[in-house]
Length: 235
Image (tube, rainbow, N blue to C red; front, side, top):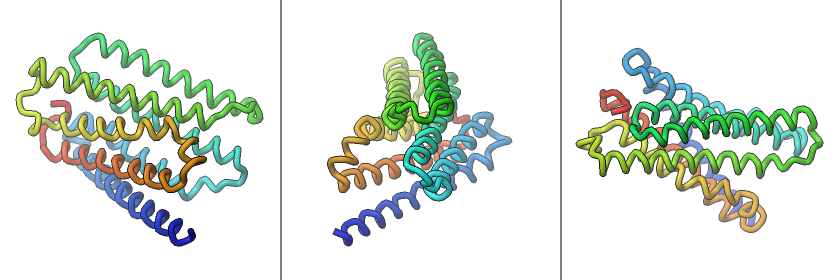
């Protein structure tokens, strides 16, 4: 049993190392293109936020108490989800042409920001309120990922059926959207059933956790590739 746990932990370590390497690559790349590409600043902030989230959750948020630790980690996850949505909100505002989806984007942005603010304030005002912050956090994050998935689908619809992009493989936005699509559609179910996975099958949780960070790393590789195509990333 100990051998299996150590093996799972080692697998997660290598997965985290892969994801961290991809994030670091994206940070260096977007930093290099800051003066050349207007959207680089958003992806630079996104990459730095992802790296900070991992470092704080893994190394700096020492669990002095179960409730305190859960609040800090879940609060950090929700704040990152907000940053993530803002970055891709800005990206899709330029990339997408459908006016209806842009209204949805603005509505969901307001919903996300207000929801996270209310959850965090309620716990700060009354730490013993008994609000299931982990379930609320999982709901917020999975909702955000599903919203991003829908934006990716609209992009594909516009690209394939409205012919807004002639050659997708040479389009930087295609690579970013594809990386985001697979990341979102793979990870959203993970956050929907996190508690059930943890309680029922630790082995499956380790696998899902590894898939989570692997797909996250691939997203940053897609962002890096998009910038090295030396075109505006929104084309």
